[in-house]
Length: 153
Image (cartoon, rainbow, N blue to C red; front, side):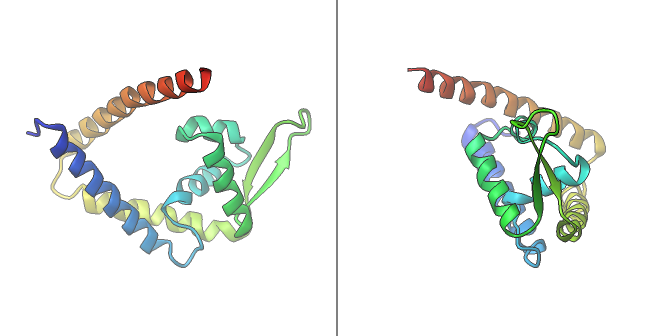
C-alpha cells in the first residue's frame, strides 16, 4: 500500500510518460501524437461536436483546444463548420484522411489496455478507475477554483 504522495505521484508520472511513449510510437505514421489522439477519437465517435463540448469533456482551456484544432486542421484531419442556426457555434468533423488514424487509436487503446491490465482483476481495475476519477475531480475543483479566483482579481 502506498502511504505517501511522493510514491503515488511517482507511479502516476511514470505511467503517464510510458503511455505517451506508447501512443507516440503507435501514431508516428499519422502526423499526430499523444496530445491530439483524444480529440481525433472523440470526433470519430461524436461527429459535429462543438469546441465548448470538447473543452468540458477534456477539461482543457480554450487556448489549448484552439491550438489542438489548429494542428489537426493543418494536417488535414478535421474541418470546422458553422452552425446553420447560430453562426457563433462551430462544429468539428473528421476528414477522410483522419479515419485511418482514428482506427489506429482504437487499436492502440485495445493493445495498451490489454498490456497494462495483465495480472489485474476486473474488480481491481474498476476500483482503480473509480479512484482515479475521484482524485481527478478533487484536484480539478481546486485547480479551476484557483484559476477563477486568479482571473477574477
